[in-house]
Length: 78
Image 1: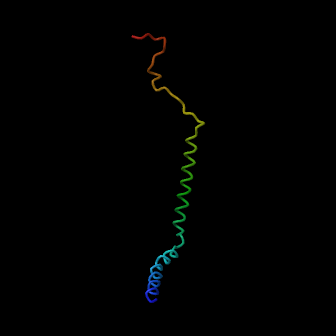
Image 2: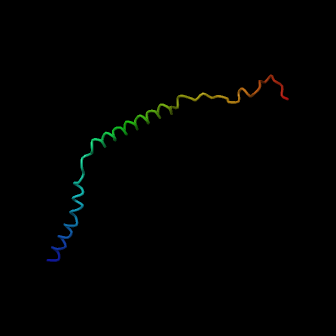
Image 3: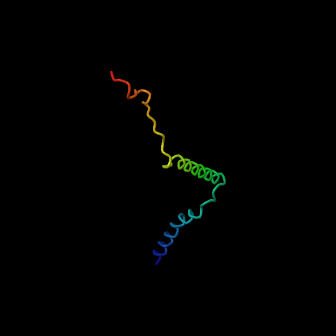
């Protein structure tokens, strides 16, 4: 009986540090909260900019970089 009581006391004492850590959460710092809000706002701005620039309905203008180098069909070949 004595061994069982000692064993239970050891198990109870071993669990105390784990229980103490659960209650050790401190409230968030106001500066940390402000930084988190600013980071979220910046992320929202970034995503909205990406959405505006990646729209599929706006087709890019196709240009021919060699247009000035080619001759017309009327010019004879050498």
